[in-house]
Length: 347
Ligand code: ASP
Image (cartoon, rainbow, N blue to C red; front, side, top):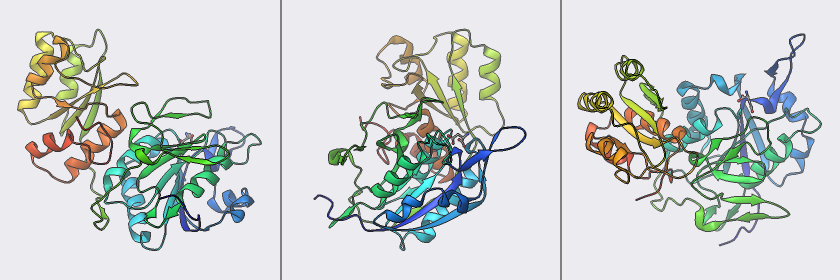
């Protein structure tokens, strides 16, 4: 089915980020400003074929200050307004946007409406800003619907003419307008003269169950990136850190790691203690194939979880989500290797 109309009721949620920042004097540093001022900078919003209401964090933040508490707040705003709106557009700093989009994709179970994250590299008041296109098209996409309901029914990220599945994205550039990439999953929509919607790639939740919102994210997780020369002292310090329940291990290539006896032993002891270790590649594309090389066989034997082609952003937030749900040790292992919201390949 193809979209028949674009009319809709959209909730714009402003969390902060460059899009709504202005220069602070005399330091010249960018600081978030009031949301009402942001709206006056885009009179074009009134021309859109949908009605827009907005809500703002009391204190808009630079997304470097984002944390699970704010994710819960965002999830709560969406939950409370879910029935009243056709779609949600979240204005968010680009620095941690992929983490928040990934987190929200897990927190919002049975989502059947669009939640679209966007932001910009230049503030909205800047002459050459990318903010207007990002915001206007994100709203247009959020209001797309056909007889079956919303065209987009998942958490996405829109930036520089492309809509991506949020939990597949990663920030790849700090200065180009094309700041995001989705290395292991195709983009969902491309904006040109028309919106080119790539229907086969859209996520569909066929259960038609009611939205369930999880707000407990367990932050007792960590990320360790391997590099040649990594010391035993560092590995031990990480694996023995107080409260650690899950570790995302960024390995080489197709999921490979050193075979030193001390390293092997450290991983095995941690897994035996009940710490979940997830094998994720540090390459920007492709994924883990445990056992493909002999340098990953020992990881499989030691009980590491296969992160397949998941991004680090998605892996860390999926771990927080599953731990927050208090699933059993075995369930965590099994469920982690299954795609819940299209965040990893199925096999
Ligand atoms: N530091 C900003 C933030 O993430 C950068 C941006 O918005 O693009 O909040």
